Length: 286
Length: 297
Image: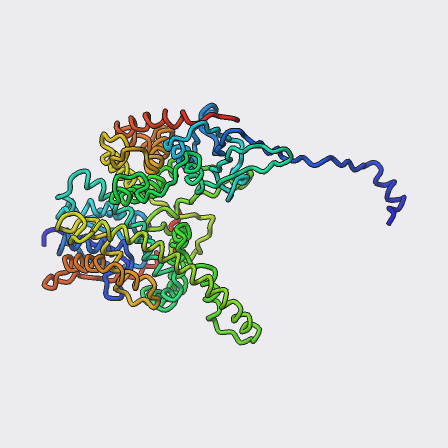
């Protein structure tokens, strides 16, 4: 149906311009690229996020080299809405702009394919079955006690910022799901006020700090003067995890959490030695 | 007695055990092994007076000691130290193992108590209602259950949507429309439930296998005396097998596939509560109106 001329004249001062759609450029890469949260330093290659750094360390310690990193991708733009994400190196075909992306839990399989290893080792690189079982205990110690202390030590955005700013709501595990026993709501279980999310949880800071101290002293004791954790002959996933946590703690501002690690000379020396090996595997692209 | 008795505040007992919470039960067993006769239990449902906001906590001579790790150190300081025979490397390993047991086994126990629908509806919820006083018993048990939700969801041990649908359907409904919808959703709910149960069994086996291998054929984990790790594991296993759970998924798994862990738990329990020893004095905490008032700091 025709637009009436009256309406056309009324709308004449406001012309409609149409622009062609902007398609995001899919940057294929000759090198495998890891999408991570940005590092602390502008020219660094190690991510400031524990999860991303853990996977960086895993790849580097397994011997994969020539990796690039990309820090300009938001978590929402990657698989499952979380980083890290691996963009595999792909041969570019004209007219095809598909990216071969792998989520974090597929990285070990990709590394196996890249290195030409078929990882059917039930011991996963540890010396014995007992060492492999013990590694599970250390993983839960790190991801429980140490992670809780790290979360509390990192600066949190203020409430105003999270309301006003465009908070993408990163899917990191909240602290109340890490602590045992789970913290009660701040209004209490028996009080008359209902537990609204605005009040949050009653996080016991002293108990987190104490468990963290016990965890770090146990870590230091267990490492001793070994080259790799649990006296393994070669680096294992546990070493990657320990390195990620130690590096993030040592990058915090000076405080009780950082001092607990700097007091343990063997942990500091171990982190320093592993860091150079991990940094060597990565180059920045952006 | 010259020294005042230490008072250990715990969640009340049920089903033949001194406390229904795994961490409180660990504290009680540890206290019985380190300071027998020097403490009394106070059954409390309001953890607001605790330094950490959770139970258990101990009050001794005007000092309040709160999270479990501090309680272990405090009780070892005033009584017997269970870890005295361990080397420093073994003590470090024991710290890691205790954390893993508290997290892994504790998640399984809280899953059985609060997330499995039949257990919650028929056993735990009625028990919790009896423990709370009149106005609080209408809202506090559900809040108590909700406080475990974040942790169990992260561990993928929370109730699946299929089971939640089953819960809604048990409500009495008079309209026939709801009856027909119930039949369709029962099929989907059952499908989801079977896979969910298999996943939970896998997770449970992954954790329990580790402890079965660590224990092997010995009486205790380190040497021939109970240590802290024995107490932590035994408390969780006792809460998995002793209560009369309507849903037999995990208790059945533990009793049939891990009999050595069950006998280890019984051994630690009888070491803590030998027949000839006096029973621990238990008091109920008095009701206080302060429990209604939120303490928002």
